[in-house]
Length: 145
Image 1 (spheres, rainbow, N blue to C red):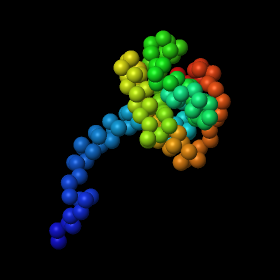
Image 2 (image 1 turned 90 degrees about the horizontal axis):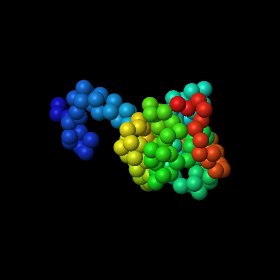
Image 3 (image 1 turned 120 degrees about the vertical axis):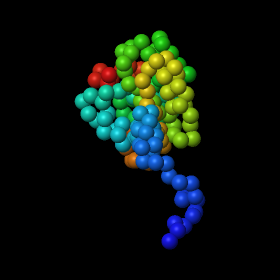
């Protein structure tokens, strides 16, 4: 009996090896809110979490432990406080905002390792994860890198 054709099945799925390579590549560029939350709760998350929104948005609500570095301010001088092998995870307001993409592009263009936290603050809120308020100290978490 032939398989029914619909919008899902009309285009054949990629071979398993191709799909595995695709999803491994995506995971090399992205992480999610839950994984960031769990890592930030550990003694050594292994990355610096950057909130790349403006200081006002950051002060209203941000991921606990995140450093505020607006994407417009990302440059070698601002990054000098972190070693060259630091992994950065960036986020912005959410899927409706491309600030995290802009921040990730700047970091990668400066030779820095970076992942994007998909969902941003919208995803964080959807997961009902805790938020912090107040201005950024602008510094690095001592155990982050």
